[in-house]
Length: 350
Image 1 (cartoon, rainbow, N blue to C red):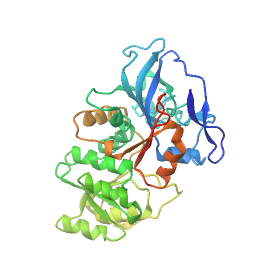
Image 2: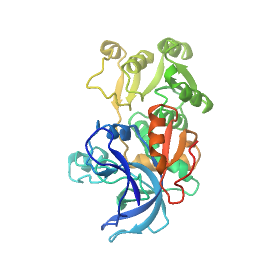
Image 3: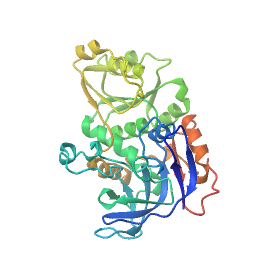
């Protein structure tokens, strides 16, 4: 089968190569992959700015069907539609695992960088990380379950108060999904904040029913006060990793407001308006990866249509992976998905 592999710890060094089909070890299953999503982490892996264990097949966001079941696996059968948490190889013994946070285990080696991932026709995964996809959830929606679960994890860390005003900074895939999740959780008003460089994504935010504020043309803090009778927004979800966005988010918050950080900056340090955050007595949380419970929460939101991620998706056949990566880097698409199924090699990407 074909697989998109990081062949060596050098910049780029990605190739579509032929590899043997995986076999399920005891406790593991093999999935036939329907779609695999390209994450910002995959771009960092490609450029060797994120740890990986090459040669390794990329892809930690995927959906598919069970193809083969290993020994000692119960509850799963061939044909089951599933998604999979990317928390393989967590030790199960450290204080984080025992507290229920396997996603933060230092021993974890996720598909796509630590073990072979889903940018291939088939992938082997631990059965205990699977979640069943409801019949009402399309394959395309299921393929975005992992970033949706990241947004749900943030909502677990900083619950959305009914009727509250929420500002989401960064109109990328996680930012738009976070906006959808906050709306589904009862926010009264959700605003997406971006810049002119993300015009297409800001326009998409508007079509999805959110207020879209261009921070390059608008004083976000002043506008936040205008729409909240001078108080400021209740919750900021920072999904951009930008120092300017962090500062604007703090300035837009009310006193005793809350800031939840989801975006990585790619820098060793950011300048933060520390005293302003202190004067406003803000609660701050950093939300990383996805909890076990967030996957069921994400699937429940998808199943009842409270969150519909499909407008974010653009599908490319696996053979056109270079086009997909280039589209993500150029921000011409929000979320690129690769279709590795045999017979789909020549499909045309939108």
